[in-house]
Picture 1 (cartoon, rainbow, N blue to C red):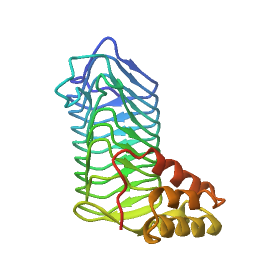
Picture 2 (cartoon, rainbow, N blue to C red):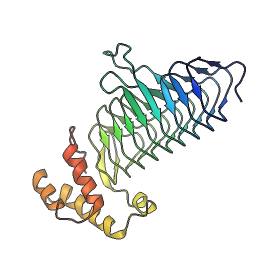
Picture 3 (cartoon, rainbow, N blue to C red):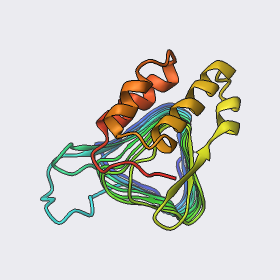
Picture 4 (tube, rainbow, N blue to C red):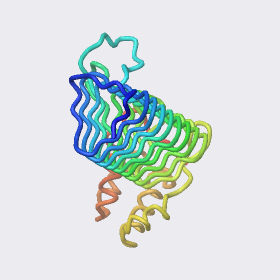
Length: 253
């Protein structure tokens, strides 16, 4: 059902069985998949939303990046299937640097969370109330970002991580880690999350060893990575790839 007070731009493309609430505005360059539910007072422009998504009241999707160099270049927000966007969430579209902000499948964004321009958010990511990702942030699959977390621009957060409430994340977080604190520090591994993902005990033990080598052996980073190369584990290989691609440097215990 589309409420009679909703305003829908003529360029918008709506899939089958889309519901749009009162006083919602669907602006230019919008594609909405099938079985999508959009609440009241929502604003959407320059966005592509997948199937089976839910967007609650007063969310804002696809608005211009908060980047002073942006000059109305073409850009967009892409949201995967099954993602839920709660009240007052804001997603900015990409800047001229990449032209897109990408949100994965089956994510859950709680009230007043924010994703800035050019971010890359993986699948099954949860961002709790009032958490915010700055521009160009990357968050891996199955990461959990607790409430009131602030993520500095260009930071990378690995898959299957958990970030504690109120953390200020200014350095990259390796996959499978727990982290917390003002100027975030690592606090071990997200063992509960790994078990929920049905990661094997062999791989969990390998990740424990990788963590020990990286952060407790006092080896230089290049020497620690050489030791990690000898561990036969897909999970450890992901950690190696993540570390080698880090530009801001790694958060540590």
